Length: 166
Image (cartoon, rainbow, N blue to C red; front, side, top):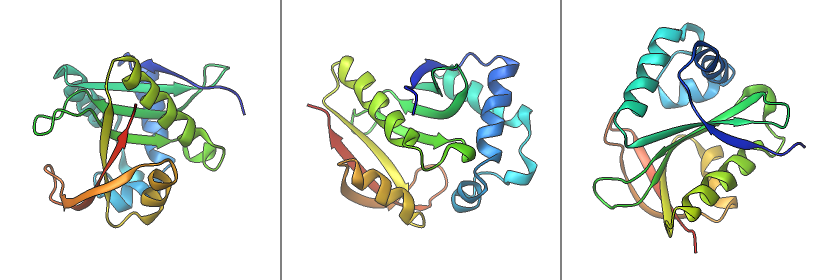
């Protein structure tokens, strides 16, 4: 497996097309999250959502690229949650044709290292209760459940997880 790097999303048409490809390649995530219909993802909608996230200044959207520069995933990080002050991983997703190759683990490690280098000592995320595969993934990386509550945006039942970075 080739090494990965994280680079900020530029919102260029090529980047948007790559993000749309990642989303459409993960139909199960689309069905589980209820955020989008994988068969009807519109580039304009994706771009608008990404512009909103990156425009607030609170989110950092990073594309994961392999050694050849191909985009294989995306990580979205909320720099500081307004309630608890921790950074949160809002989304980590790997292109469907790259599943089961260790890329998700590498993306998570790179995101954690990025936060550690910024002096952050912990990070959080929420896993949808109806996504046991995601819960198993994050648990295998040393994340610990700290709470259960609905997400603020859609009210979906979630498991809040935390990882110490020190």
